[in-house]
Each structure stands twice: as C-alpha cells, then as structure tokens.
Length: 322
Length: 249
Ligand SMILES: Cc1cc2nc3c(=O)[nH]c(=O)nc-3n(C[C@H](O)[C@H](O)[C@H](O)COP(=O)(O)OP(=O)(O)OC[C@H]3O[C@@H](n4cnc5c(N)ncnc54)[C@H](O)[C@@H]3O)c2cc1C
Ligand SMILES: Nc1ncnc2c1ncn2[C@@H]1O[C@H](COP(=O)(O)O)[C@@H](O)[C@H]1O
Image (cartoon, rainbow over all chains, first blue to last red; front, side, top):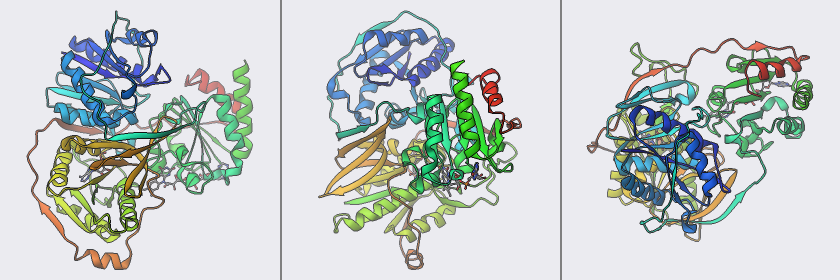
C-alpha cells in the first residue's frame, strides 16, 4: 500500500501547500511504513519536483501534458484513481485549497474512501486513521475516524508544519491512460500577477469600517507593502465597494490562516472571526477598548487607526532595515 | 431545463457553539435555524436565471436531507420563490450519505443543473457538491462566483489562485457556488410566504449507503490567553514582540 499526495504548482513552481501535504503524508508513512507517492500535473521540471523528496516523497508521478492543464475535477479524479491503482494507494492527501476541495470529495466517492476534510493536525491515530478537523468556522473541532479501508484527507493551509525528512526519489514521467474528456472548457483566465495571494500570504493586513472610506486605504497598502503582506477587509467594506470582493475575509468570504493577521478598525464580529481564527497571531488596532476583536487578538493597541497605522509603518520599516 | 438547489439547515451564524455533556452533539437549546448562507445565494441566483430564461428554465426545486424539524427552513426557501421541494427524511450525519441521497433524486427526476454551496456553515466540509457530481458521474465546477445564461449557454466564472477563469460547461452538472454569485440574498415577501404554504414538499425515505467515517467527539478551542495591550505610541514595542516573542516576523 502507498500514500498518494496531490501536489499543486503555479508557473512551474510547487506551491507551499504541496510541501505541507507531503510532510503530512510523511508522518503517516512513518507510522504505517507506506511510501509517499506525489502526483504532479503541469509543467514542473525535475529539479523543482525533486524538492518534494526533501520532505519524504520517494516517488513522483509527473504528468506534463498540455491538455491536462485545464483543471476539470471529474477528469482529475479519474487520473488520480488510475495512478492510485498503479501505485496500490489507500491513503490520499490534498490541501484544503480550491483544487483540493474540488477533487478530494469526488475521489472519496469514486474510491469509497472516507473523507476527512479541513484537517488541522497530524492524525491522532493511524489504524484506523483518526484526525481532528475544524468545524463551526473554528468555533469547535471534531474528532473523526475512518471506517473504510481507504481514506482521503484534505489539510487546512498553514496548519500543519513542513518538516524535512530527506529520502531518495524516483521521478516517473507519466502519460495518462484515461482520455481527457472534460465537460468544462476554459475560455479565459484573468490572473493578477505580482500581487500577494491572500489565502497564501504569511502576513495579512486587514481593514474594517473603522477606516471610514475607501479613500483611506493608502496607509494600509503601505503597511502591506512593507510587510509583503496580503490585503484583506471585512464584509461591510467590500459591500460598500470601498475594496474589491476578492479581499473580503470571514465566514462568507475567504478563509485565511496566516502567521500574522493585523486587523485595523475591525470590531471582531463572529462571522469575521470565523474566517481568520486559524491565524497564528492576531494583532488588533481599534479605538474602542471594548471591541470584541480584543478577545481574539494576541496583541492589541487601543487607538485611532489614522494615528497608529503610520506609526506601525515606520516601526516595521525600521525593523526591516535593521 | 430544471434546477435543483441543495439547501442545508444550519444554526444561525451568531450561535454560541456549545455541546451536550458527552461532547457528541450540539446543544441546540435556543438555536435559530437558517438556510445555509451560500445556499441562500445559490437559490437567489437560480431564481434570477429562471426569470431571465424566457421559459427555458421550467422550474427551480430545493432539496434538503433532514428530519421534519428542517421543514421551516424548507418553507422559507419556498417562500423565497422555489417551486417545490424534496426532503429526504434522515439525520444529515455525514456528507457522503447526504450526497448519495441528493444524487438519487437528481438522477430520478432528471435535473440539468444542481447548485450546492461552497460549504455548510456548521460542518464546514466543502464536500457535498462535488460528491453529488461523482455519484452521478457528471461534471462539477467548484468556487463558482458568476453564473450566467447567455443565448441558452451557461457561462461561469470560477475563482483560481489570484484571479478568475471564465469557463463554459455542458449540462448536466453541479455548480458549487460562493460569494459573488448574486448581490444580496432574496428575502421572502408576504405573498411568497402565503404561497409557500401550498407548495409541495415531497418527503421520501433515504437510500442505503455505506458508512465511511464516524464522528467521535467535539472539542472546543483552547481559551485564548489575554490580549497583550500595547500603548499606541509604542509601536516599536509591538514589532519587537512580534519578532522576539511571537516569532512571526
Ligand atoms: C450571515 C452573515 C455572514 C457574515 N459574514 C461576514 C464575513 O464573512 N466577514 C465579515 O467581516 N463580516 C461578516 N458579516 C458581518 C459581521 O456581522 C459584521 O457586521 C462585520 O464584520 C463588521 O465589520 P467591521 O468590523 O468592519 O465594522 P464595525 O463592526 O462597524 O466595526 C468597526 C470598528 O472600527 C472601530 N473604529 C472606528 N473608527 C476607528 C478609528 N478611527 N480607528 C480605529 N478604530 C476605529 C470601531 O470601534 C469598531 O470596532 C456577516 C454577517 C452575517 C449576518
Ligand atoms: N443536509 C443537507 N441537505 C441538503 N443539502 C446539503 C445538506 N448538507 C449540505 N448540503 C449542501 O452541500 C453544501 C456543502 O456542504 P458541506 O459539504 O457540508 O460543507 C451546502 O452548501 C449545501 O448546498
């Protein structure tokens, strides 16, 4: 038996969530003696792919065929099932990313493999696999055990550590047997390059209604630039059109789990916290000392954003230059 | 064409999450139940498309897997404008089971488009929509933010890393939708509420499925240590703590 990890890449580079997933699989491997096989779909060269071996992948099945680059989740599911058969896999690890969420549930049905989604830590047991997963928007965790022989796991971004565990690797260029027969056709892609991707950013700077108007975002943008951070906002801010909907975080917006989340003029409504509670450290700046956000924050400043943010920019700049 | 919208019945988003003594079930005392937020958006968009379709979309149905206590939520969906409803009479215990039930009805009744929400706001699985599609062996599109019917063709936008993709898709398929799909959820008007009383809810027994996972217990997050307060003049101190103590910069 083996463990399959589905990796993701962008512009020829493996994404951080791929290393998280391989590290996760390596922990299962250490407890079950099953080897870790990584699947890569896309134009990723062998040098880049071999980085996966540093974290425990001893085999990489690489599909680099133009027609497989459009992601159709039904076809991808067939492809993974085909490789699973070849590799005799019974455990599957994905990131709980857009792609993982699209494919893993389908694979669960296809393989009759119990699905454990949004997992936040390495398994609490391995035979059978039992894991802790996030539920109620971070308001609780659930301990779930697999009953079936096979299992599919999706891990929450930035919640499981990347650990080095070098092994020898064998990279196999693979041609799918399944014909690519997608029900979807991609017409156009509209991707902003150069911008920090919010859901992947290690630091996120976020503004709320306390900033009063979309015209007041200059200082936040500067703070984000200094910190190489993603920019986010609360829902009313995007509803008002002060910022784009892409930046809305919270229960009904994007879920982020950076190392550092800096909330400026955000009161800390439960629906907002639902989207950011996975952050390792939360800093809040709010002029109301009783704002609920301080119940969730690790560090707080009671003060006027228009006064505090410029100071923060200066302090972080000083730190960067020191 | 016919649209089927999956409707989860979930605790209102402001609910304080508590469990019974053995930490196995949610303490539902005082909980207000609502349509899962994304499902409400999906239903709104389905109704908008039906209205714009010039009769091409004949009806919009909703489906819920749940016990009789979910009926007020189903009635609400009917009051918002769904034409009819299905309820599979079973505890919605796990996503594989729920998806198997919905797929069964969707197949039997030949639905062309199935809408599901990106995740349920209680379980947070992000599972059911894609699972339905695999049970039916049809296409699914996740992270859908725009759904348009143009000259009878379906045009979608889906979210990808750092942007969007425009795609066309064949029916039947499952659209798993998220924010952007419509501006505001439609609210039931008095007339809708009156009409909903006579709209049919077809109740049926579940089909059998395997049990693949089992929930053991819940646990609550560790209480957070008190927030360290820093004087607004002393932002250098904050930076020092983030570096030296929290080690995040
Ligand atoms: C079903 C549902 C889903 C929702 N989903 C989301 C979601 O996904 N994300 C989300 O964010 N919200 C969501 N909401 C809305 C949520 O309930 C709150 O209304 C929202 O988060 C409040 O945004 P805010 O904190 O920016 O604004 P407010 O609550 O108005 O807070 C503004 C804060 O700024 C402070 N302030 C004012 N002036 C200054 C100043 N000069 N300097 C410093 N501080 C200042 C105030 O003291 C206050 O604490 C949802 C609501 C519902 C019902
Ligand atoms: N009990 C249910 N009945 C009908 N639809 C459901 C049910 N549970 C979940 N869904 C649908 O599946 C979506 C994703 O739910 P989940 O996989 O539980 O996060 C929801 O937004 C609903 O559209």
